[in-house]
Length: 90
Image 1 (cartoon, helix red, strand yellow):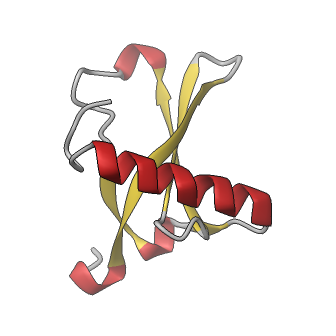
Image 2: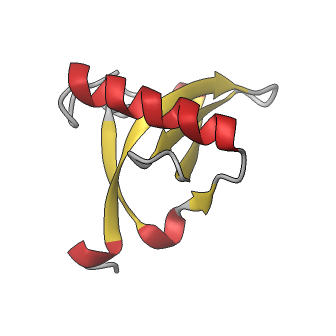
């Protein structure tokens, strides 16, 4: 299990759905450079499942190569952090 130094706070930047009845949540680092992606069955979503932010292992992050996407995610992280506490349900 990762210790505190191996975790980073990520903020919800995008929510989508696919044709397999999965909800796709994307959380990004404040700089928009890395992404944590989570897929959940729509039926499994509880009222407290989706929060504004999560602390995740750095091993679970993927790099974002698209500079426009990095900028968009960084802006959305800033907005979310300004408007919500990390544990707020979204």
